[in-house]
Image (spheres, rainbow, N blue to C red):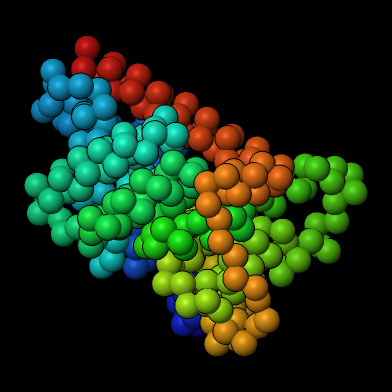
Length: 320
């Protein structure tokens, strides 16, 4: 048995990719995409025709509609290869507009349904701003399930739980990156590995809070830099993993490096934890107090928005 197979005993494995040709070999339950992953995919020769045919088919429609149709095309291709759900992201430029996020999410779901995909097989990815979390609350009330992404802080996770979102994606690697950069020459890679990794510790705290208070929102660790971070979160509800790291896990025999369950919901239920609640003003202040989360959230939205603009430029070229 390899480490990937062993990990599946404790955690639902999700593939983090827009490259659906890679999916079959790893047999993930679910798959996640984002603008950066789709941009990476459409620049490969095997995916360029998918973009060109979508643009040609809907020529004359607004660019944002064609974009949504292309995202849904990718999602449908992925769903043909996995048994579970695909996450499709709302335009990051709408991260501070609740109404526009809801409208865009509803259109994505309509397009999936028009392609014969049941609503329960799609998670709408939304940035974990206050406005995004509020949009997710409204969407969940309508039966549209959401995946709150770019999540770096405990306050974001608590607010998502309050909104009863389906799933959150706390970012392990980007938290690690921030603390490593802040520490500079003082950073000790070995000492800050495994359960001491700040990204791993953040997910553990969120997981324990949810399980202790019976919050149904699923926790899916994301944005990993190495397999050590992944294995330190074995037992998390889900882990979304890039194909390169899935391959590394599949290459290691558990006889040489065993995999143990690191997170335990039953143990979390026994912890002495205080209940926490945020309204809009206390949420904004708590997020502001967390320099790492404030910076990484803003940076992540900017990066996804930039890649969306690049995707639009490629689509415009394909249309000309």
